[in-house]
Length: 113
Image (cartoon, rainbow, N blue to C red; front, side, top):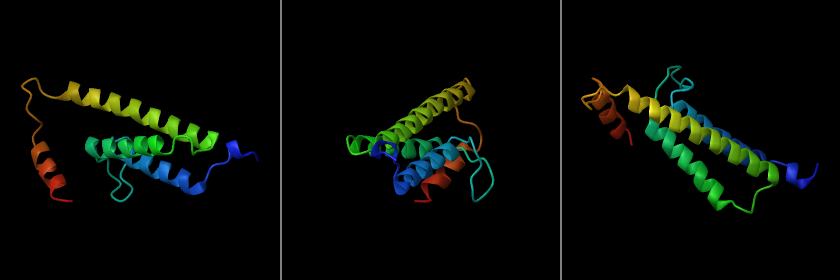
């Protein structure tokens, strides 16, 4: 196998792990521990930002296949995030107030650091 077609398994696992965390955060799949859909766009954004940082920091140091995997994964996540964010903006009540319980959920998330 030529070097451009090789993928380091550890690199691939990092990309997949961060990608899955972002997908869970966007509410696209259920949380692996709870089995529930738990949408948290902030967590999704953090994981997408980490993948972008990884791409920026590894420029020129990846095989062609690794670069393709990272670029395609990142692009798909960014498009999905934009779509989900748009849906979130459309579903907010016209008065601009959050849904009941959203404030409590936000408080719970901040206390779990």
